[in-house]
Length: 260
Length: 368
Image 1: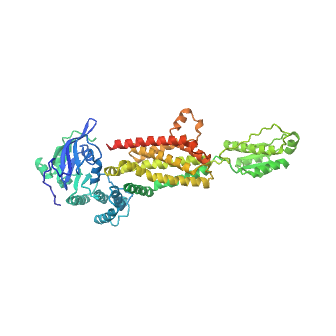
Image 2: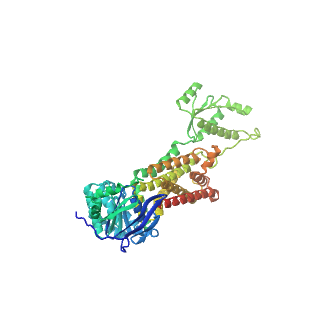
Image 3: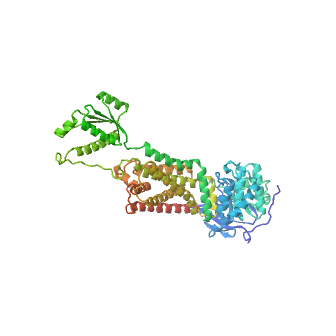
């Protein structure tokens, strides 16, 4: 697979940025979970968010998704403020978590209808698009059987497709390929590229360093701070490493925080 | 609104595709009603009674006929010796024996005083007592009719009547209790498990990231169980009235409103539990141990509250089912109106408001 590396540098002042953070901070009591992080993400970019467990990835992502309020700093997602316009943010983002996030006792079609429904997609549109979706995923035979019978890889692909179903501007993927075999992981990344080409911004956290190399730009978080932010190629050059694995270990080694 | 309907439809899928939920929902009420109605009955009916009237006494025969007319006794007239009687008792063929002495009529007419012996099976003290009580009532009646007013001017006969349940129908008390129990299980346990399941599988996160309002998640979870509980209520009521012959003395509408109120209380309880826990097992354990047991013990339908030590009586006031049980008994069995149950209803109202306030507050805290 050819890597589509985006060399456009995105400064925090960029006006058409789809995610924009300045000194975003989250405190739990005296604990600084996220410490003044700043970055911006461009439309259609695949933005990798890396860090050891407890580095503050999930907390940062939760703030951007409108699940928790920042303690200080500024951030806009899809042009909406994370303090005052959480509800509007939610309309324009899709989300898929590391835990398998569909209903096992519903069929793929019912899952699509449900998630489309709660995002307010009109029933007629759901009907049309779901048929298309099932066909493109090759799930025609399984469309009316319970999801619990599907292999994990297919479930993840379906979950991703559902996260995109309401045509969000940004999709947040929280370790989306955990526990999936390499072939399916590759197919999954094909889907990610396809979505990015259509202009959807992908914000993805991962533990797999080969996946980090697929991203246009990568941030590495250590102890709540952003320690590195650049294209994978530049990062490897900067730290004089042959692969992202080494880059990650060089930075993560300095961490003093353990798992929360 | 449309989003809510989509959500509620999904909840119904969950309910109808889970065998365990279905079993609790529809199997449990049936089993409980039949169990309490038939198996665990404390009433006495068709007691096998042997009458020994060796001398063929006339008045004794009339009294026997009176006993035969009653549905309480299966009367057999036999001539048995004392040892034979004992054997019958031992084999369990009879529960009571009535032995008339020779010259029973004679004594009664000449000296206005005659006796007979009643033997009952003391190994079942409750049944024994009930039989003796029934027998003496029947004999009292009989004596009244056969003694002229002049002969016994000062006889005072207490006439006992069990108000609201003249036949001593045992299922009558159980029905409101079973209603309280079932509604509590369905609304509290099933609702809390339904919410916690979303947390366990990770779908709750997806819901919270969606524009669907968190408070509406709670509403969407509660609505199916509200509807199913009403269906359950109707089934139990039909079974009670048509199978167990429990009268419906009061207003059906009032009963319905009270039930709706209790369902609301139980649902709020379920939502509160689901907020405080994050695993289905814990949620189920709390609903079962924390609510079922108090419901059974402190409602008063199995153990009379009046006999409990005072501190327990205070605790019982905290159990919603106690108030529901009391209100249902008043309306269903005594036929009382709103004026007699407003207190119970306001208590349930207050409890619901309190529980819901805590639940919504907690839910918001969890989000930030």
